Length: 184
Image (cartoon, rainbow, N blue to C red; front, side, top):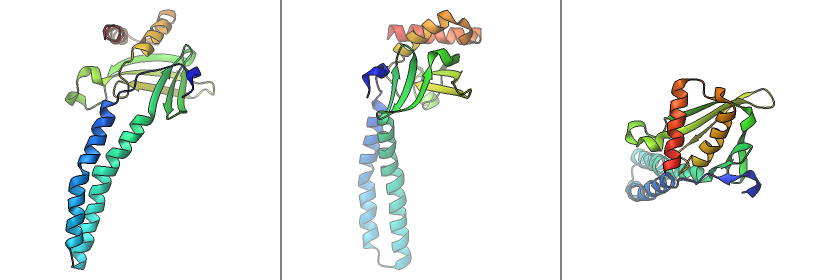
């Protein structure tokens, strides 16, 4: 990753490890299914056995491993002027702070009530880019350990341009998120 892009938000790896463990553990029942499929002699049962084995392998082994790899590739970098989402070393989305027209601090995403509130915290920046197209960039604690550097940088923008927070509720949510980030 290019150091000139800014400071990387620390990546959350717990979801990646959970998906890796899930995919690897579910290799065992998939291998058992392969053994049963190999034992079949009759044509319809043989096709059904291999078909189910393939479906189980794709859904319970390949999909979690692919999701883990995909999440591991996602990084967020904050500089003085921009926030950049990267996939590996390749920037996929950049939003300049000067282009931000609205900031929203949210408690959303994740697995809802199954995950703690701090895990569901996200910051959404909405703005218009140089081409005039409306864009948004969402940074969630599902993917990063801390939103602190981003919230601190956004606090500077909000101090300069208070209209970025469009309501009193938004101001309270942002203040709460910033306070929580400074504590932890």
